[in-house]
Image 1 (cartoon, rainbow, N blue to C red):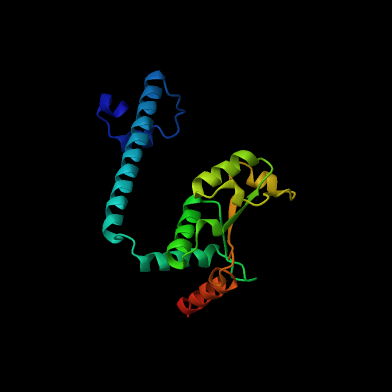
Image 2 (tube, one colour):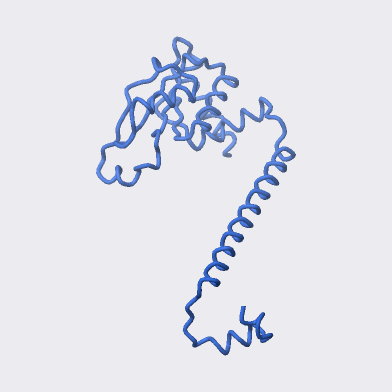
Length: 200
């Protein structure tokens, strides 16, 4: 503002006034407010443009998911989130998207049916148990009759650390054989064999 009125460069003014205490008047405060608003809007616009570009590129980078693609994608998720010991085929995650992908993997790749899934929800003291069970049942398309008794983590220090971070806890989904050997212990052995093969 001073530069515009005097014609003196900003650099020179900065040097001249570097030790002069500065108290902005209302006009300056108003300009700073507008500038911040403008900067925030510009930043948001750049973010939206970046997200749109990433979405556009994703369509080209990743075509429609084939069965082979689903096989490998699901295996990758299981490597990170699945049980590899005890003869139990189970995946654990707090994201319904991850769990739904894994359910699709079990169904389309191994022929597991919805009735084969048992779900146990791991909760924290600040979670609403009834609301949480309804949430996961709706998200996963699994009836509440297939949900096991929920577990509430009451360990000291956990309550404060996790409070509000996991509003619906974590879902532990286990595959039960229901009389089909291929969906029992053998299923985990088969998955573990796949893991060993791709990790070589």
